[in-house]
Amino acid sequence: MIPGEFDYTRPGDIGAVLRVLKEREGEAKVLAGGHSLLPMMKLRLSMPTVLVDLRGLSGFDEINETDDGLSIGALATHRQILVHPVIASYPMLTDTAGGIGDPQVRNWGTIGGSCAHADPYSDWPAVLLATNASLVCRSEEGERVIGARDFFIDSFATAIEPTELLTEIRFPKRPSGAGGAYRKLERRAGDFASVGVAARLRLDGGKIADAGIGLAAVAEMPIAATDAEAVLTGATPDEVTFRAAADAAAAQSRPVTDGHGPAEYKRAMVAEMTMRALRLAHERAAAFS
Ligand code: FAD
Image 1: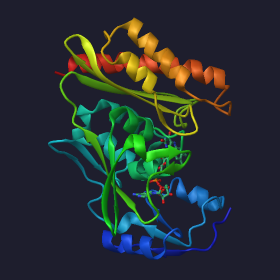
Image 2: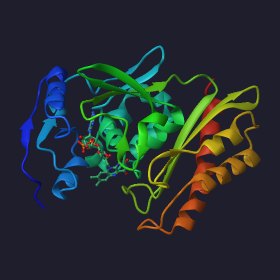
Image 3: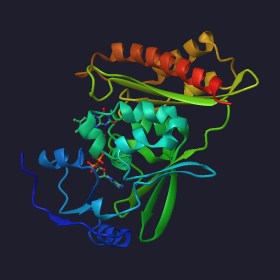
Image 4: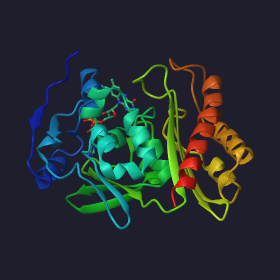
């Protein structure tokens, strides 16, 4: 399959990127790792008339711990995230980065590309929902910070405007007593998720003070299991609570029958993977003080 004709540019600074996005609004596409965009172009599902290669930019793949939390540049690859020393304190992120595709995909694919592409089967969006992360978008008009729960709006659709570039993902600081985990069910190693569950808990005084649950691959878009979050918040962190939350997450999921399996099976697996993610998140939260 051969893509349609397009112009190609590789600007060396963000101003030039934003200028092209403005001048060729709706026609331009930015290219990060290319692992999703190029297949879409070959299938002619995406037909930009100009491709703006982001690999001329520097500094947009940086990973830093700030007073507010963790900042990951949109151009950080899955592999860069996996091996960065700061990420060791955020094990849900290493769970996620380490389980994406194969080494080639992890070496090229970026967290920004993954979020902007918003494939309902991808892993990062569920994690951003569970952690209440924010996404920073920049255009010639300025910068917008969008909460993850407002960012993913439909299948392959986000709040990014055609003139905007996603530049950074911000994860809130991990307070003591907080822990998270991402558990993914895949047909074979390296596959997209059949079911993915991101769980985050914060413990305080023997109770769950705060919780976040994000689901991948079980709806037309990544979703937060808000009913499960309500079950968890204020409850005792035990198997009874986790089971009730897992059942609530399964009930809120909207899986479809596809090559990954029947919808009924996937719904049952949402409950199972939620249990596993919650148990591990609890273990990590209890150990992090
Ligand atoms: P690109 O393909 O370059 O871009 C994707 C889209 O996002 C395009 O529309 C592009 O214009 C837009 N975009 C990119 N960056 C920005 C930005 N900074 N601002 C605004 N728009 C932007 N993903 C998983 O989650 N789990 C998996 O298990 C998994 N397995 C895979 C296996 C294979 C074989 C392949 C090919 C891919 C797999 N992926 C998986 C997807 C992979 O993670 C992709 O890398 C990712 O979805 C897209 O990132 P990218 O950097 O390649 O983006």
